[in-house]
Image 1 (cartoon, rainbow, N blue to C red):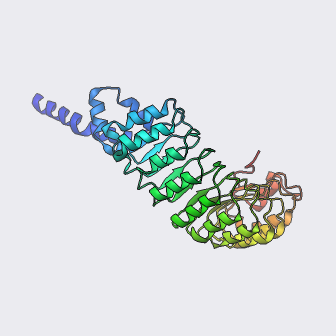
Image 2: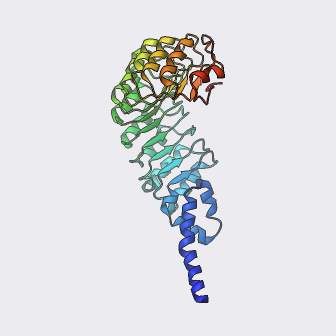
Image 3: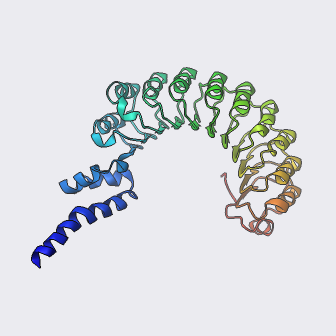
Length: 351
């Protein structure tokens, strides 16, 4: 009897507990998972035996991130890493990315997502090094980096042929040449963020609009120099669901009417699009019946008439509507808006 009990206990430890630990650990943040390695040698062995637990390397906001990155990739458990997140990490430089290329390039063959947001010491040289090791990269983000230029984007498109999500927000030194490279290389691109890329013009954006027809998300926040010559062509993006045009001061009602042909739009940000009137908003209302998010913040040329138009098609879909600063709309209290759009949950997007 005792022997049977011991056998059952042993089976519980060897089979059931590891299975339970694996199930639990798949739901833990990666940093908590790393902490668990220190609990006991047995738990360490159990956790590192599951490769699927080590497909994410999270170094967000950490100090000495470059050295930590190299140290992590020297470990066998990270040899199939699929996502590396270095958002706002400190002490990550080109030299670390070059070391990756020279010492651990095999560990990056399966990498699909690389987040370098806020890593401001990275230059074109670092981009060239790291992307040369990531042939299967699908998502690349390098928000708020003023050192990256068209040269870095050239390395990206040459090395990574399968990108579907690209965030260049705040990369103020890229030009239309970068957009030409992206357009020629990524016909299947689904998401593109060009926020505050201030050197871009209509010429570059039109390249994207003509060649990246699969785009579902396009962020053109704070690109005030663009004009209707580019905006008119957004209508060619038949799959577009999210469009951010905040600060598009040259956007006209006619161009917005063209954009309204993107009938799958779910979210549209028109904050500070100061030339827009009821005409443009009503065109959106008539075509975009799935709209859930709309910001008209700061537009003085719209009136209650545009809300009436929206209510005829979007009363059951809109959950976010910002009309703060729209002085032409007289009935814009929360109570008034809920009468027209009963499913509203958010009334303020911008502060």
